[in-house]
Image 1: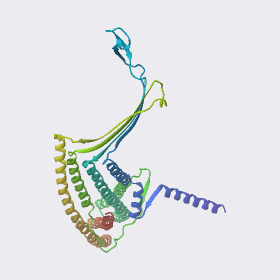
Image 2: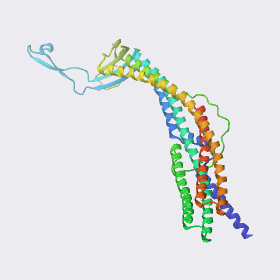
Image 3: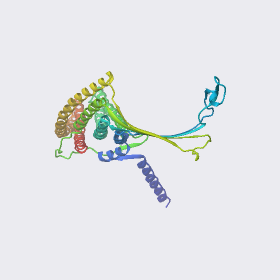
Image 4: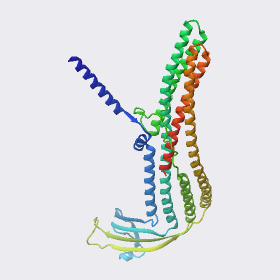
Length: 440
């Protein structure tokens, strides 16, 4: 009974440990699951959302800037603590002619209530700025998609690098066992007096190289996981694990449709450059403003915000204001620069149009190339493994030398590594094609 209790306690501890480990570690068995996680964590994508929201707010600001309403309301309450003194002829007050009398002038308390408004009736530059803001939203939206596409491609590359390395790590583990077997065979022959010390040294060196390969692959895997954390914006303390195993691709060639994101982005920037050129020219045009002002004043000898005994004195005016900025060397230079920026953007748009078509063809070539390489390398790996197995028996029987056995062993190891990497390359190209077809 006591034994049963201890076993139950051990099982419970293992379950709790496994549960805590699962919480501390994020496990991904497909690229899609990792991409979903990136969508939640990536600061790049969050920054892109902020940029788009900023562009939308800029459009609203540009719309409000067309009439560019400028209005203000002010209330001044003034206490003239010491009134000014004026000198008048004294005879006006019954004094002697030729003399003067000092008289304080003005009212001690003055209230002023002012309203002023000005609005632009003709604002060609403002309308063009609004068009710029609309084009900027479209450009930002496309650039965000390009940023997301680039991020996904980088994540996919890192993801499949890890799958390749982990598969090679597993293969290296088997290679170490094989290398150890060779060492044991050579040692036994040496002990029997039918092998040289040089053969033992060569076999032992092969075993050391195999174990060192394992350590090197483990280091590269750790480095790739750190690179993946950087792409996903994960802290160093947060563990992630990719559990997907390398497998065959879907087999059928994926259907591709041309992705013109880069071309559309360049075209939008061309339209923006054209609008910016027009906007810089329209800053030289005159603008027409309407303005109006209304004022009310109250003069009192009592400190009161609204003295009921005193009436407010009203005054107002309205008018039109036509203004024109005389072109300067600086404004002319800005117009000239905007013109050449537009001409350069036209050339860049044509370049992106051609590049989009070439990238489309390159994806198809890369996929077909990876499929062909994968099929060939798998066959070669099987042949190299068969040759090694036969050479082991031949070496046991003394038909071939150790050099030939080690050569066939190294060829088997290298061909297996190559087969793994090219098989995963097919998966990577399929993922890139999926991203290419999806984000557009």
